[in-house]
Length: 126
Image 1 (spheres, rainbow, N blue to C red):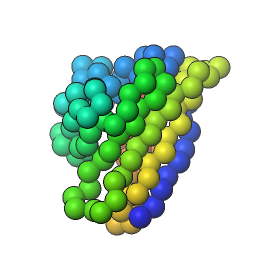
Image 2: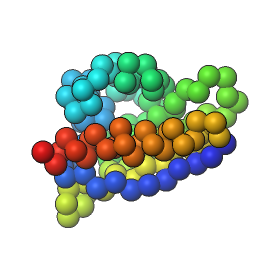
Image 3: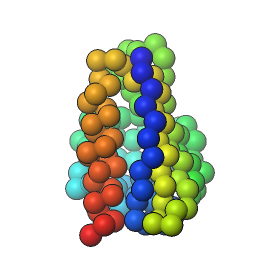
């Protein structure tokens, strides 16, 4: 199992970024993909047509999102924590993803950089 931590700068205030990550319609707007999101603690989510599935553990608008991601039958929970901080250019998003299966690690990192945060950053730059 591996962990990943990275900061991303997004050209929008934290409340807008929080909404983009927790609201179905807003998520679909910037990702261009279907999303099913129940943004309450214990609520399920399915993103990118089921490529990412899990549940919300903690939500503190507009600064913190904690999710559990499902990777089959792995014994340890894979936890995603996103903290949103005001930044001179908008928002600094602090990402920490723990217990990523070794076999999925590079795909997950590429997904965070190129698809997930990459698409969100591009959306707000337009």
